[in-house]
Image (cartoon, rainbow, N blue to C red; front, side, top):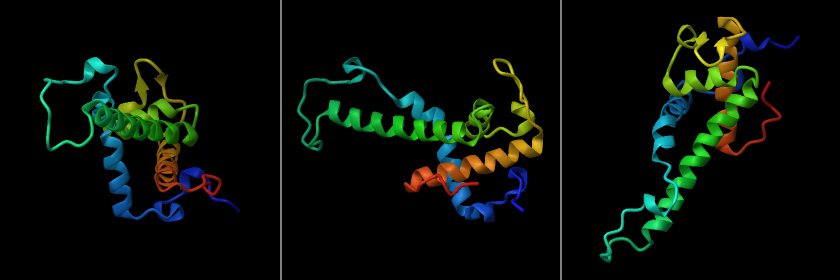
Length: 144
């Protein structure tokens, strides 16, 4: 008999305590990364002076940083959607702001979360398992 999602443990997903902490810290940087994404040339600060210490242009460097920030944010969002498309916004809010079930149970925009506390935490563990696989570049077929 298969375990229910709510009964899945970190060990079931093969995630150590330290790996969980690393994934959690990655998610807590979400808003910071979102705020660092800059759009357009106007986002560049260029004083017209050559910079000997910088081999790439500021525009190129900003584009590379933007791409990294966008990919990281998209990865977190994708993991939340794959964990449970019905409650992904609650999951996203919880993992990116470090909020417990009690603080996301009722959302001003989404209304009340349609699952109980135990199922929420089971879904949250699944989210971290999916995020772990995405970060490692593994296929997601194996995640229960």
